[in-house]
Amino acid sequence: MEKIPFSEDELKIVDEIPGFFPGMPGTPVYNFPITPREAYIRLLKRDPIWQTTFVETKFFNPSVIPDNVARAFVFEAVPLARENYGGKDMFGIEWEYVEVANGSMVKPGSPLLNDANEWEEKIVIPDVDSWDWEGSAKINEEYLDHTRALTPNIMTGYYERLISFMDFDKAVMALIDEDQKDAVKALFEKLTDVYIKIVDNLDEYFNVDTITVHDDWGSQRAPFFSPDTTREMIVPAMKRLTDHIHSKGLIAELHSCGHLEIQVPSIIAAGWDSWNPQAMNDTQMIYEKYGDQIVIGVIPDPLPPDATEDDQRAAAKNFAEKYCNPDKPATINMYGMMTLTPVFREELYRQSRIRFGG
Image (cartoon, rainbow, N blue to C red; front, side, top):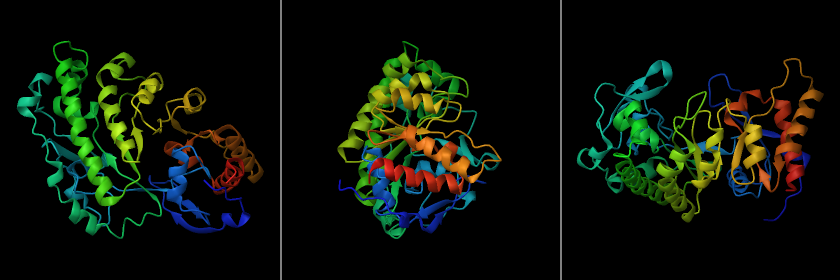
């Protein structure tokens, strides 16, 4: 694309986006030379113009998708009252909203499946095309202003969905039980069919920019299953989904919690364009090792409490030198956003614009 030389006038603050997490500072909106949406897409497609810091994105999780209500993660024009969170997801699984956790969990005590081989008999496949997509598009017309990249989520991916059907202990066993593995693979392919229909409707009715799939694979210490299991059981179905996302001209982003450093090759093999690791991962090491294959969310080194303005600018310049590489860009990790001071942000923007060359 045509280069746009950096001007100090760009650093004028024209707006602010509130912090996503409680206690997180807002993100300044500068006098950008192009829309934040364009900048985010360019970085994820490895043609960056500045270092993105999530001011460039806008959550869009419409209530027309039952999982967004069940999982308490609705973001659209009309806010959903908390008392309406929970309920049945798209497969009819009952979720309960837990106020203290600000999230939902499957209603315990009666898993739908005791054995993965039961899935064709017991699971009702949702009719995605029958949902009121057109009505949702009308309600959200003003919300979808497209100045920021629209980033909807498929809230329950492959392993998470298996847990919702079976509970954790049976789900993790089903991945390695020779008597259940073929059934799990067939179920994951059917899930892909469903998710592809969701992608198609999100693209048609809302002109979204990315698709994020939530599929947690690990605990704070280690993955729930081995890389070999991931490559055999999950990667093939995921790759078919990411291939379809890419065929629509969209960006495929993975949200997967846990200590997953050994799973990064599987994440890449599954076709994801970006991943924001949680803080228990060595994000800087992951970037050095894999950043030429996937855009990694890197957590900046924390600033000391007594850091001077010069210290903050030096830290931002150091980050830019390491991670603002035009051929190997990174994002600022969402889990590291609270460490960014206004001075650091300003200097990082300046240095990234200079390094990316417009």
